[in-house]
Figure 1 (cartoon, helix red, strand yellow):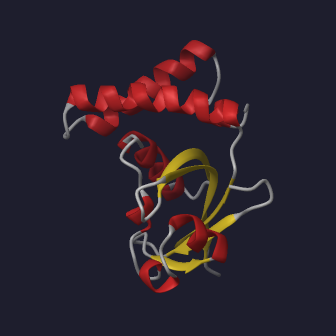
Figure 2 (figure 1 turned 180 degrees about the vertical axis):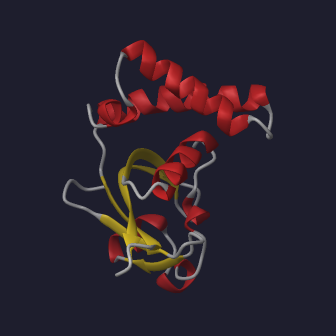
Length: 159
């Protein structure tokens, strides 16, 4: 990604893409027609631990914004890293009616650090098996954060 790029998308409550900007289209490699109505996980890279997405969804369900480093996969099998800010979109009654995400280029230090953490989380998910994968990788992430003496947000935003 270029320094001044912002990838923007909106989804409905089920994670289906309802809007995507031209930068999203460019980096994903999909055309707008392929993206609109598709599940946002169309760009999920297999190197991403399931526990990260559980944390993201748990945070959003609590009507809070979430920051995360994410490795996305483009249509051609390539990948690109982003620092994502995902927020619940609230209607006039304060009810969540979708989600809004803005992503930008992360620093190299962040990508290196998060690659190491995510690799450990994936190893833990494999050891735990499908049923317990998310909980196991979140427990590992919590352990790493406790060792560093920082919260998730402080860790993510420290790069």
